[in-house]
Image (tube, rainbow, N blue to C red):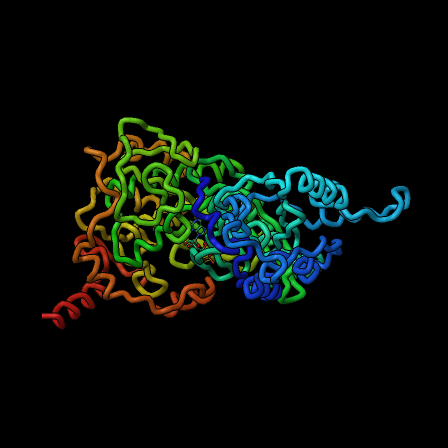
Amino acid sequence: MATATNATKPNNGAKCNKKNPRDNTAMRQQRSDPGLLRQPSRQLSQTDGIIHPAPPPEPRPNSRSARPHPLEIKRAPSGDSLGSCSIPDITTPKDQLLQEDASPEHGPPVLRHATNRPLAHTQALAAAATAAKGRPPKPKVRLVEPPMPCNPYMVRVEDGARYSFQAAASCFKPEGYSRFMWDYHQEAELGHGNFSKVYRAVHRLTGVPFAIKTNRSPITTLQARNMWLNEMQALAAVQGHAHIVRLHDGWFESDPRSTGERVFIKTELCGESLGGLVRRRLQLSEQGALDLLRQMASALKRIHEVGMVHLDIKPDNIYAVLGRGLLGAGVLGTQHRVDNSSPTATNTAGIHGCVTGSGALYKLGDFGLAMMQGGKRVGASEGDCRYLAPEALRTRGFLATGLAERMDIFALGATTYELMRGAELPKSGPEYLDVRAGRIVLPGVDTRLVALLKRMMSADPTQRPTADQLTRSPLLTSGIGGGGGSPLRRQSTPVTMLSALHQPTVRCGVSVAHIAQRVAVAPGLAESPRGPPFPLGPHLLSAMRRSVSRTR
Ligand SMILES: Nc1ncnc2c1ncn2[C@@H]1O[C@H](COP(=O)(O)OP(=O)(O)OP(=O)(O)O)[C@@H](O)[C@H]1O
């Protein structure tokens, strides 16, 4: 980690802060006036508002009297370079306040350095050392290349020959301090949903990347706050599972742009969500589907065992971690094969996961809709209609039926079906009903796998297997002969044709009641008798024939 390259970069400790222009003013001043860097007390009093006695003025190098003879000029050691970066004595705002200890027992306030020594003492030591050796002592700081980008709330100060970082003045204002901004550097947006955005954020001190989810609009009501709390606590309740996203932290902080709050949920950084597969028109192979089913069934078993239901199983909420623990791996097409001889493998992130078959590792996330079985939903959202079980269309009280967990099984079946066919599931219309009646088409796919998916998507929730039964299903435990192979395959023609026929007509996020209404106005579709060899039904078949004749 330690390199000398960074030590030569000019003014590295005062990088531009895009988020907080107030702090940039001081940094710009530093850059435009090198004299300020040599007179830290002046710079500090402008930025952090803390009073420090000014050190005795140094002779300006360009003044005639102070200019040394050219032959006497020596290059300063890299450790003393003003541009060097160091791991400083980090001073939090609280520590900073402690520095001005003005309690009556302790007498008048004593100005202290960040190391908690009185400033006068530190200066006396520095002066004594200078007098003894004729040059300032070397700062006792580790010079390393910082893995973190510059913290916008920290300003670098010099005290004699020592460098340290102190909290900027903005931290002392309640609305100016953000724990997220203090600790993390926000990078690319990983994705967003209806209520949130997820960012890749790097922990400034350690350089470890995380996925941090935050709200899109300020939290102003107790109900909204409880929804977020619910998400954090639901995820916390099922931690320690190899196929559930790891939760690291969660907190609220005041939103400087409003009177509301912001929430942050810090989780492990995974690869791309499986939703991206469908959008890129890639299909999951049989092996990939079996891996997905095996791992998600295991995750659901854990969730259901603690008495919870997820209620938002869909490709967008399943993240792929390919190969052995690739933090932030995002390239589905360039996957490394994992040793199939070992049923479990440890990735570099220390996660013990079942890595079999194609070697892909999947993780379930987004517990925003999770709830206790039989409980009441905190928010009003219904989830994604494409993966919604038919009983949810029939009655609003479906969550209290005691079979709520079978909705997760239906959603997992629908998710796998969508990923295998490589085209988005419809949000309404005849095919929407077909899927809910267990009529699914996967040409060329092993009939046992299709049968399992049909059972999982059975219209009668009691006919669907439980998560526990799924994990013990012979197909998942022993697989389809051969094993191994890529989790992906190229899209085949029939699926492309079907997807072209059934373009979604209703935007996602539409309420269940609305879908139920749409279903009701399509007379006879649900009841029309269908059977082999036309599993899609006569109306779809004629539409397909029309489409084919148009293309000829
Ligand atoms: N831990 C993670 N690692 C990598 N990417 C993630 C992670 N968590 C979320 N994402 C990305 O962010 C996107 C949105 O996240 P998430 O589904 O949690 O948000 P949401 O607001 O709850 O979405 P929705 O409203 O659709 O339910 C995901 O589809 C995924 O692409």
